[in-house]
Length: 441
Image 1: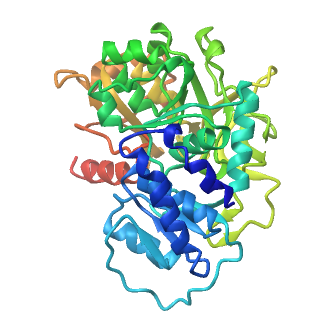
Image 2: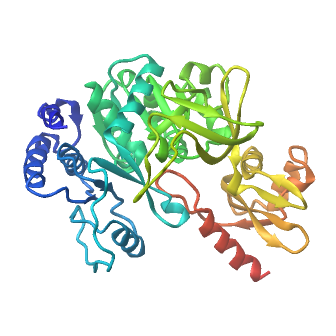
Image 3: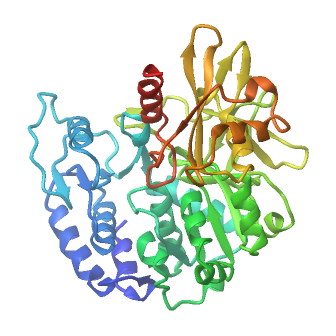
């Protein structure tokens, strides 16, 4: 892994503020780490250069490394510290007392722990290695038939979606541009040729960029605009297609080191709506489809820290989907999000899509609230386009689109919905908000 340091020396590959400092910071930290005995390292650096320097140095020194969000709450940080018991913390000031649990050595030293599950409550770390991450890169380059990957990154590096953009560029000799979503949304555009770059977005970022004509035109010049992190709604996809954005909707997760299925841009522009075909490094098995998705992949994590999975040959996930006769993956929804109302199974994604098509709302999430008559009552929590819109108007438009049992019983209007940086809804938080509001009715 020491050859990682050689790749750092040419800072022309990295395009961001203070990129010229990367080689020195990386080398100095690497020398310090090699004097220690496999310290467990938490990285929570806000600066992209310091984050990458820390990550590369830790990997080169074969240290277990934990990627963390510097903006986690105090409660989340306490949870992480109790789990990890780190030897070194980079990027944040911390004040915590170590638990009484012995700080035992992790069996595999050169591991990369990537956080997952924060928005749903308990933070977990998927255990990856340089090998699982590079297997994902290899599948990506083979699928898109390219040797060098240039990436334009506005996603957090501690998240798998940001980290894999670094991995693709760094390991293939490509360029990596790093900026913030806020900087980009203010139309401060980097001086690059977008045709030569991949850019990765989550749906809420794409929505904001398409509201700015200048950024919409700029986005349409990219060879590929990868879209993932959360389900995209039909209206957003149609708008992207109208503006000839070369969108590539993807399906993947932290546990698989990012995408394992992707719809190619040409297919998207031709009108296809799905998650695309499976990348060469992965395989998806769905029994009695549509049903739960089972994944086999060279990029699959080894487990959740500190437990290693005994069987990595079949990773069963919560998503429900099917493969059509051409090999395209279609995602219906998540099994855990399924709502059973009056004995009928309902997936929120379908209802949310129908509500969005009314063009009366900005954002929406459908959940189930316990109900003595229905088992669960469908509840739509939404942001209206304007305060004059009544839920009765939305409801009336749904009658021609949905079966009666799929039309929400309760409607709650809010000024915003809780989403994380990847655009995923915090359903637990919304559940509590809805229950508190409905109690007062």
